[in-house]
Image (tube, rainbow, N blue to C red; front, top):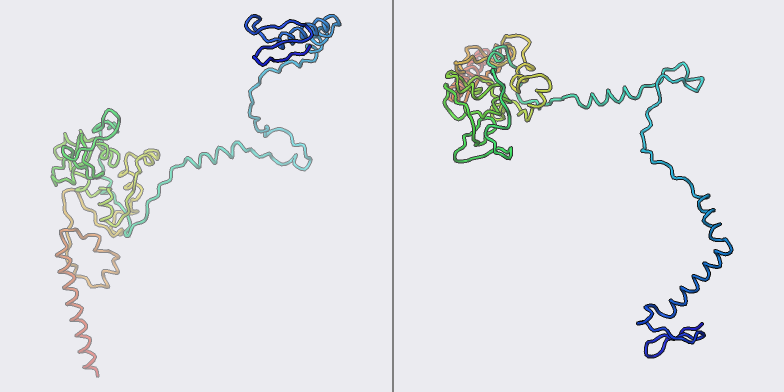
Length: 330
């Protein structure tokens, strides 16, 4: 049967003699003829038994599906298992698991490194007595913080903290001795750096700030003493078992003896450092091994200049005396 398309768009079939229109039959003449051929072929195969045989072979050859098994990591062999090699039977097997544990523990060890300053950092027993303490612990990240757990910085209503040098809200200390900005410490800085509670400090009328006690470890005070800043050490010193950064610095940099071999004068609470002109000459000063420059305060610059001028006059007099002695010998 041959299907041809007319010029007007209709389909006609030759051999059957009848034309099928698209509107009436719903399908074209070619599709109608194709479906008829498919039905005839299926009937022929059904009579021959080919379809049943194909279905039977398909079910027999289909492989069964394996159940899903998640992948598991193969553990290391048992260290106590026998060695196959006769040469290694007498050698103890290596325990790789224990080696991995040791390496991980070394990585988690706390290491604190502070750069060495121009002067040695040495403390005495008197400095350790000046360390503060608190009855109740201070909760960090609450006082002076907003609902979003971020600190509130207020340049108008805030108070400057001597340690972090930020104008923040919340509790700040007040030193009865100096009554200056250097005596203002916020609650978090006072607890992390010195182990004290700001509320207990404000309730104590005789509380003195770490600056007046001579144990302040802020960057400015440390640089004035010839020491390098410590940076953020609170989390590390807590892991090591120390109460605060000040406790760590003083207890780990204690001098072997309480004598003045460290070259640093111990300033007791309530006393002020002073510089007195020494009556010893340069030889005696070098023999004692003391550095008087460590005892110089900002208020004693005039005294130091006077001492330096006196030393210069003594030097000129000595030179003149030596010259006269040489001339007399000649």
